[in-house]
Image (cartoon, rainbow, N blue to C red; front, side, top):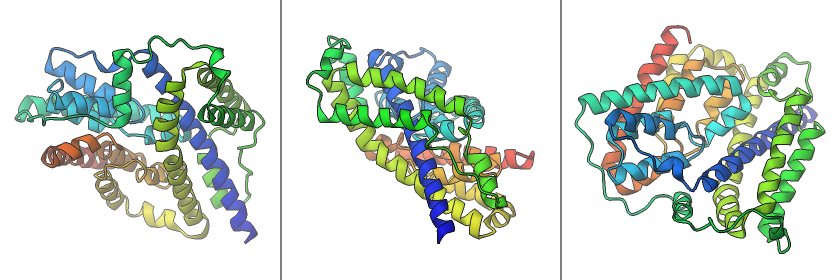
Length: 365
């Protein structure tokens, strides 16, 4: 019982660390998007290849914003079907944040590979396949609509100022307290692992405890100070509609629960069962499973394969197949408007994931 409690607390610390890092990165990207007035999502190329590159570029943006933008542009005939495919291949949804937190070096490598594969696949689709017929689309996810309102000038007149703290809302205070507590926890090493002597747990720690060096924790703590300033000085509209409604309410609990659940299952499995040998002997089936799970238009299931890779249980080929196949929530607006369009896009997505997943596996990846 004591051993399980220790394992549980270690998973809890790691889940809080990862969730905190993910939310900090989301808040920073939200800041950039708001203060660029959505211009990242309005510049289009005049040629098909340029649209494919744009689609892939939107896809590699962590989170769902780029994906929603690409689906909206495709629905309004601003992006080709190949550009839509490129976005879906390149996108990893909210899991991109988690991978940057858990496996930063591998995440950057994976992002580069996804970008290249997305451009290649998108170009081939536009080159040889019949162009898709965009569906009439009345609107995207609420989060994207908020960004669209900002682009219209909703928040342009409100400059950041500390005067907004005079009548701070409950949401602003909660955000500030949360970020400040996370900074303190990082700076004082409260989220670091307690290393075990058992071989199985030590192996897990070796892979998951990537922020065990004090200077890395301190670096993230310093970066988080910018988020504190942003929360304290920005307008009440941005705090409530963007930071609280779009990020905290829609993403925080989901990210934490999926991260905690995936880590707990994997660590219990590695500690009490010999699942590493079982999985390592069935990698082709794991690639197929990763591809099929990627069909689900939901952020979360992919975390299982991220965790398995982070612990060294599965090779890079499984992570690559899963990352290509799944696209988080990005395709949900497309599914809502056109089941046929969603099905066609996911068929292409799944085929590309299987081809490159097994190709990577056979060359030793």
